[in-house]
Image (tube, rainbow, N blue to C red):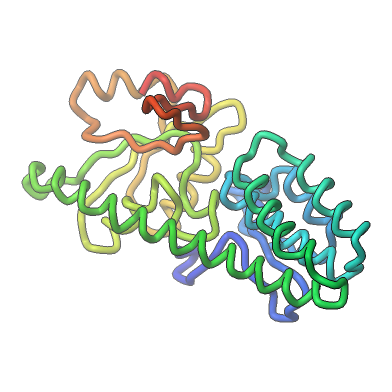
Length: 260
């Protein structure tokens, strides 16, 4: 998405081809800085230290962590160590376990000499798959937003969101916020109410930053202000991510999502 008018991803392969660059989310919203990750240890620290956040981005970052580990040493022991080390960084993150299982399935059958190249190729495939999935979410959600916007007679569609489900939580586009970016880019007037999302303030620090940087009008509100805005008819739609979805349709997300 856009930052200072330039396209940016939350993670990208660095120009040297031997490392990845990630947006340091601990520095937002007051400074936009990229951090280069060259080793397994640096990837581990980036995940545990909240430099990268969001389940999709954590999964992609972990895949690159395995790839970087294979560049340093591609033995069976080194592969298992990398997988175990990264699995322990955020044990509840579904995307993390999925990405590591996918990397393991590709790399375990290979001879060590073949692993470095194949690890990078698979990490790149995982990265681009995430981008495509998020873009598809945006296209699908845009059709729903268009239906609601048609009832607004040209007035902005007011959307409430909680936590961060934008491009900073993924590689690009985002999940729950992907339709918002698609709508804005299509010329649809939208405005986003952003819950601050205590205690880590992902909404105020991350969501508001990325929306503003992309030119999407937004307003940060206290977590308990959503009900007041709904009561006054100031919210047309709520869009949030989901950490878990049951077969019955129940969803679990960041604390304080229940009230919206």
